[in-house]
Image: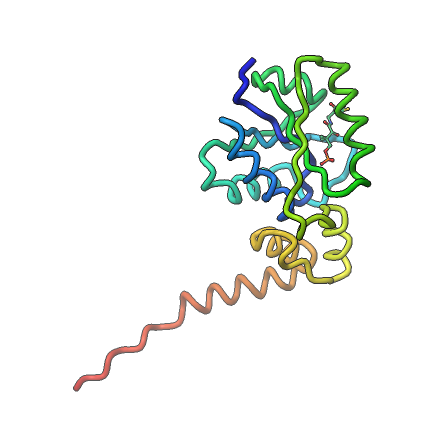
Length: 185
Ligand code: PNS
């Protein structure tokens, strides 16, 4: 077991600024942080596994000790397979505590050597959750500032195909506008 490796498991559907905040904090503490997206075949997520993988990879590209992966089955088994010693989880408010405590104790029962470490995201994200972001975005509300810009854009594309078409046309127009020639003196 490697003391420097930690796993940050979750659904990340979609990744929020709270998740990113926690990843940044975790990356400063652990030698290697593996952000592990659950492959859940029962749930029907808003973003496919591939989309979440791509978004998280893009968002963490500058954090050299952060790796993004997916896992299925028991989290503790996956943690063992990558030699992780710690599970990182975020606690935003007291309402998170009960669920997180239950999960941490169940994981300890399943694998006593794996420790759960809780960290708090910045207080400005203490009310931000993927579920609320989905809920607000689905009815056209603004989520800017709650999710990274790339996620905001992906949400718009997903929920409003007309927006995607508009962005593609904009991009095409920008590349097609001919450069102005300099006037001869
Ligand atoms: O972001 P989420 O949905 O709160 O993450 C929950 C997650 C993925 C960490 C949890 O559901 C999990 O670890 N699932 C894998 C199956 C497992 O090991 N279950 C026992 C946990 S007590």
